Image (cartoon, rainbow, N blue to C red):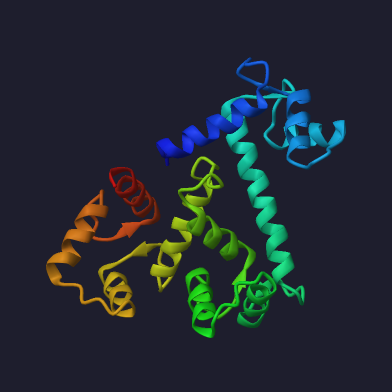
Amino acid sequence: MSLGEDQVLELQRSFHAFDKNGSGFIEMDELKEGLKTLGYDISENGIGHLLEMVESSDNKLSFEEFISWNGLLWKDDMKTKFKSIDVDGSGWINKAELKKWSIDCGYGFSEEQVDDLCYSMDSSGNGKINLEEFIQGMAAAQEGNSYFIINGELYIEKLQADFRAMDADGSGFITRENLVEMANQSNYILSKQELEETIKGMDKDGDGQISVEEFIASAIKLKADS
């Protein structure tokens, strides 16, 4: 998945804000100074660890490494947020914890809003949210803004989760029956023509079913064309 033009421009502005000498790279002293202006006073060892996160071998960040680095930090931030919501440390977020979090943050979600939020993230359908589902849900919610800067990694993970949710029998393929069932759950009446057109549009090898690779490729193409 390629980043949108607005996202690239925003990332470039952030990159150039760090790259004070205009070398086209963010060097260790520039990274440390830039983080300090954002309120993060990090030691040399800490900066070295950040560079290791993106496997930088020359102690500086290219623009591509800057994107990857931001994505890794975003994931760490989401893990911290998950732990703060998961007050009982169970490894799952339930509706009561979501409700309490919304109140603590000043959102004060209604029961219906909590139900909707839980439903949107709970890809396994067990009524609670694990860390993977939380990260995927947050990625979907923040897609299109400056935080979604991870070369499509989280987007691919979200598509894989969507595929698993549709592949109800765990066969590794989405069948006509799976598509009809998904439409029924969404209270959408899928005509026979629409069903065949959907299958035909995704089923590249013509075997009458949709593999995870075909599903992801079709979703990315649809996004790129939109």
